[in-house]
Image (cartoon, rainbow, N blue to C red):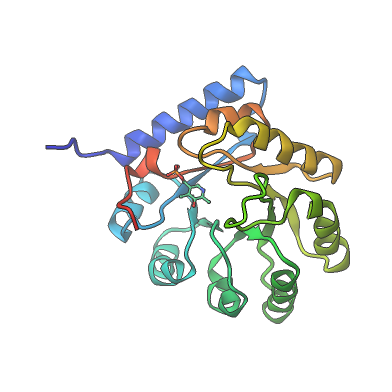
Amino acid sequence: MTQPISIAENLKEIQSAIAEACKASNRSVEDVSLVAVSKIKPVEIVRQALVAGQRVFGENRVQEICDKWPPLKEEFGGVELHLIGPLQTNKVKDVFPLVDVIETLDRPKLARYLVRAMEETGHRPDCFIQVNTGSEPQKAGILPEDADAFISVCRDDYQLPVKGLMCIPPVDEEPTLHFALLREIARRNGLDQLSMGMSGDFETAIKFGATHVRVGTAIFGKRPKP
Ligand SMILES: *Cc1c(COP(=O)(O)O)cnc(C)c1O
């Protein structure tokens, strides 16, 4: 038999690991936000995290956000929902009212759709630009060499609320090079928020300046393979 997992316990452990990592790099714990990645997990499980006080969540699929989150947002105040997966332009309208942060802005066409949705609704979710730091052909994100120009288009031409950068390092590579690259692109563009680090490497990411760590498995347990 497997041990039942306590989500409240797991959250506490992650929060104290975050506090340790902040201390080790002389950072304030308030500067690092834990994004609890609840993808695939059913409403009853997510509710346990909400009851334990967690308010910042990440989901990677638009349909799942639309199915799962309206009742949870109604029941619990102060939820901050991050979209951390790909956003098709024809889905912007569906998901737009539900998300507070879009971490996956990665192409000009999507930027134009977001501008229009913000104009039409007056809702202006914070945006992070996703950078494909490993230049992996199958992966979303703007290429590192195109990042400066794209940041400038989003921020200066389109006036989008660009707050920072996000990356998902290649699974089989040492993540530190990717964290350092993301930090450098942010620095030279005057952006101070970095979404990087997952269950396996969030403490390392904090040392490299992460302001948002996206942790799923370490809170909610293993996910079934999709
Ligand atoms: C699933 C996912 C995570 C969480 O990964 P874990 O290893 O379960 O912590 C973080 N970021 C993104 C973009 C994800 O899709």
